Amino acid sequence: MVKFYQSENQVPLEMHKVRVVQKLTLLPVEERLKKIQEAGNNTFLLQNKDIYMDMLTDSGVNAMSDRQTAAMHIADDSYAGSETFNRFKVAIKEVFGTDHVLPAHQGRACENILAEAFVKPGMVAIMNFHFTTTKAHVTRCGGEVLELVDKKGLLPQSDDPFKGDFDLEALKKTIEEYGPEKVAYVRIEAGTNLIGGQPVSLANMLAVADICHDYGVLSVLDASLLQDNVYFMKTREAQCKYMSTKEIYHLLADKVDLIYFSARKLGFARGGAITSHNSELIKSMMEYIPLYEGFLTYGGIDVRTIESITEGLYESLDMDYISHGPEFIAYLVKELDDYGVPVIKPAGGLGAHLNCSEIVPNVPHNQYPAAAVGAALYIAGGIRGMERGTVSEQREPDGTERYAELELQRLAMPRRVFTLSQVKYCADRVKWMWDNRDIIGGLQWVEEPKVLRFFFGRMKEIGHWQEDLVAKFREDFGDSL
Figure 1 (cartoon, rainbow, N blue to C red):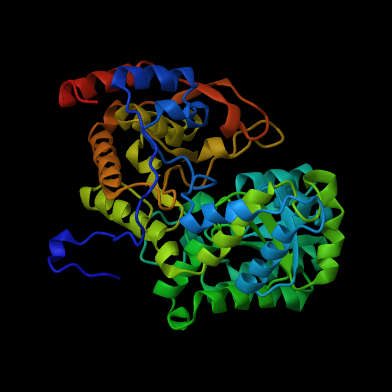
Figure 2: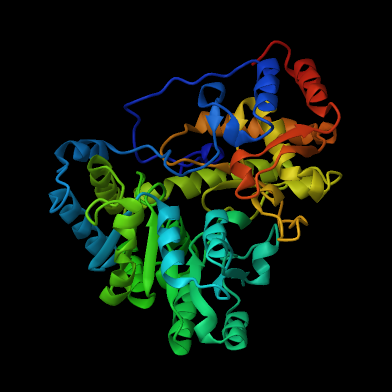
């Protein structure tokens, strides 16, 4: 924490400098209307050239450091026996303390391998909360996902520092109800993506691992967002205050059976990996790497990227680096909350999360309020967020809609990418949208894929509220972009 002499100037302070820049474009509001409608009101289908602030995700869009870029030039592209892979294994050992590692091209590839190896028809995978691709892989293999996040996790606003915690009593009861043999694994998501990036306490993670060991059930840690989660452990959990980041990583790896991660998040690069102390578990998954990914020394990742992951893993231990995202997110959340905009509190990892059920209370679940707010925000400022509500769910087998617990629009904060003036611009445009929220209406499907519809689906506005929003923008901003 760096304190400013004049407290009114207190802002998050970057512990890095920018040396490479990329030009951005901010289209006129009329063009933004045209682009979002051409994209079927799906921010995934917008083109990057038409976006000013891309806050869709923090996956694979983080800025690499000078050391990561330099490391790419020493890559060994041997198909087998690569020194690049040996350096990667050394980094895994340093960060997690584990000896065994399987590379994969990204986090969802790891999820696919876990599902193939451990999920059989009729089994359940227990999680604090699901992620979209995680659930899709489990259900594809005939399994069912059970969510046991503590009830505090679904409260939009509270003072609880760890809203991603498991309900431990419910976990024990569920394992006993189904029987350990029916539980494929218990997955801990460090930083619950779909409920606001809320962290899980170290105490809760260790308790989950102990319960799994007591019942003979496999424990799995999704460490994709672990660097954010470790920041919150160090700043919010008393027992972690004087632990080093590496001590926390190692303790978790010692307790859980398997760890997997997306290096598109953890390590500021691309790719992913599964790691463990348990050589037998790794061997049980080994055959899937050459089948789905590539050889065991590259797993579908190009070797230059593996070098950048290797350096990025070391950087994920550095509090100066891992504090950047959470502190910028906290700044944006405070700006919006002070103005009265409904946001998920306390600020978590990943990004700021707008509570769309409160922003547009007259838009029902079946008109997709979170997606509508995302379209409105792009019109308002050329800002691309991601729907994390009902559109991100999938329909039940009988075709009925599964309504999300929370209707969120996520404004992700890619690491080491935005300047503070851009974050303040984002806050300004969200505030304007909030003041004009009564204009925003709902959306309806035009094209709805059966699986992962939030990636590919298209919707249209109900009525002409988007044209009305453009007219109000011109009234308030004149000829401004």
